[in-house]
Amino acid sequence: MPNPEPPLPKKRGCFFYGCITSLVLLLLIFIGIFVIARLVVNRVNKMVAEYTDTSGVAISKTDMSADELKALKDRVAAFNSAVDAHSNTPPLVLTAREINGLLASDSDLKDYKDKFYVSLDGDTIKGQVSLPLDGLVKLPVVDLKGRYLNGSGTFKASVEDGALSVYVEDLEVRGKPLPAEFMKGLQAQNLAQGFNNNPNAQQPFKKYDSVQVTNSTLIIKAKEN
Image (tube, rainbow, N blue to C red; front, side, top):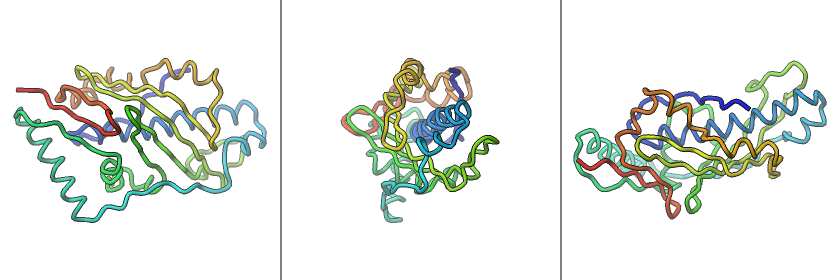
């Protein structure tokens, strides 16, 4: 299966705005590819019932006050300024709650508000989505009106030497793992290869010595001056 390139994130000067947003988009892309492929190949409403729901599911939300969000954005901005100034600065450490707070306030993701959630578990990232398919996906052979895509995925992601690595560990639709034959080929791919092949997309990552998920936190280390 070809490795589709996700939409390039706008330049925000920090890893999570690019990488975490892209993880969510990749999750949507790959769950969507699988579901749509199955629907087209089988061309029967039975597959619609198997891989979609008649309603969305509750997605976790992050409640963050305006003052708390401002303080968080100020901390991120200060880190970015130090990175741009090539000044030695301590790593930026973000929790899943802080990441979700930032993503929820991102105007580029307003269409996905309350439809996805990112969590950190040890050294993995998990994304959960609940998306209405009516209007989002149009297929001539199936009727997706009133149907929802409810799924989740677990990823490992890191940045080393300016190269982004994103590997999927598992994908689920309606609480059920996708078939092993589908996952086998997908798990072997670096889902971020499209970024690494694009100098403009890769450039922001070169500012950092490393980006890793460790102990359920996202740790971004600037290059030492």
